[in-house]
Length: 512
Image (cartoon, rainbow, N blue to C red; front, side, top):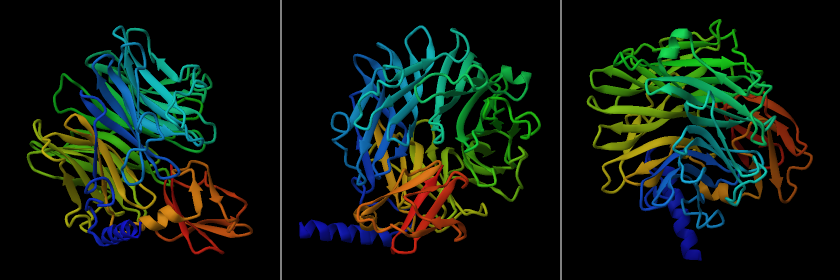
C-alpha cells in the first residue's frame, strides 16, 4: 500500500509540473481511455461530471441484434470503469424495439439522475428521443413510466433530432434543441421544453415546442440548434448553423433568444435571432456557446479561412444580438490542408477559453484542442503554440465531439477512435492536486451547478462560518453567512472559487 501511495504522489507531482496541453498520466493509460462496448461501431458524443467527480459519457453503440442503441458509460476519476453502474460501468438502451438510436447529448439533474438526448428511428419516422436513468444506471420509470420519451416536433412525416439537452435547476424542466427535417435539404431549428416527468410543457409556446428561423426564406435552408443555455430567469439562448444546399460554401452561424414563455425575445436583434459570419471567409458554422455574466455570447465553431483550410473559430455576439468587436475573435488553423471543427467551448478557472473538436481530412483525423486567452489572443503557454492534437494507437480516425473542464481544471475530451469510445485528459498548467481533490472531508455539490450549491461537511467544520465567492480574476462576487447552502442563481456562467473564514481549503465550481 505504501509503495502504491508513493507512486500516486509521484504521478500527481509529475502532472503538476507538466506543460499545459500535455496528456494527464494519472488518467487511464498515458492520459487516454478506450472503451469497446460492442463489436460494431461505438461513438461518444457527450460528457458530464457528477458531483463526486465521476465521469459520465453518452453516445451510441452498434449491436448485431438491435442495431444502433443509446450507450452511457460511467468512469471513476482515474479513468477506470465504475462497476457500480449498469453492467461493469456500461448501460445500453434500445429506445424503441429494433430502432436505430443515437444519444448526442447528456445532462445530469440535481438529484443525480442522468438524461440522454438524441434520436430514435423505428423505420417509419425518426423522432427526438430522451431517456432518463437512475444513479445506478437503471431506467427511471418515473419518467414517462418507461424512462423513455420520443417526440415528433412537427408532423408525422418529419425526421427529428435532438443535438443538445440542458436542465433548468430552478424548475427541473428539461430543455432540448435540434431540428425537424421536411426534406433532405430543408430543416427547421427547434427548441422544446419538457417537465421533469417527461411531458411537453404547454406553458412554453402553448405546445412545448418552438420552431426557430430568422425569416421565411430560412424555411428553404438546412438549419440546426447545436447548443443552448438556460438562464435563471428561464430565457433560452441558442446557437447553430444554416446551410443552403443548392449554394455550396454558403454556411453561416446564427444565434437567437427565447423568452421563458416560448415567444421570441425581441430585445435580441428586434426579432429574436440573427445570423453571423464573424470577420472570417464567410462560410461559418457555430457548434457551441458560452454565456458570459453580461449575457454576451462566446460562439465557437469553424470557418474556411482560406481555400481547403477550415479552422477553429471563436467570436463574441453582444447581448443585443449584434456581432461583437472584431478584436474579440480568433481563428486557429491546425494545417493549411485540414478541416478543423470546434464542437465545444468552455471557460477555465483562469478565464481562458478552451475549444475541442477534431482536425484532419477524410481518411485521417485526430482529437484537437486549442486555448484562447480572455482577450481572444492564442494562448502560447498551451503546448507552446496554443493547440494540441492527439492520436490513439494505430487508428487513423479519431474525433472529439465534446469536452468538459473538471473542477481540478483538467480538460477532458471525449469522442471515438476506430470503433470505440475514446477519452483523453489534458493538464491545464494550473491543475489542482488530485490528492487534495480526493481526500477532502468537505464536498461541494452539485458541480456544475445552476442555482444552489451545498456542502457535505462530515466534521461540521463550516458551522457558523462566513463565505466569499470569487471569479477567475479574483473579484469577490458574493459573500455572507453560511447556512448549509449558497444561492448562486444570479452568477453568470463560469468557474468560481468559494472560501470560508474557518477552513484553509478553497472549493471551485462551475456555474452553468
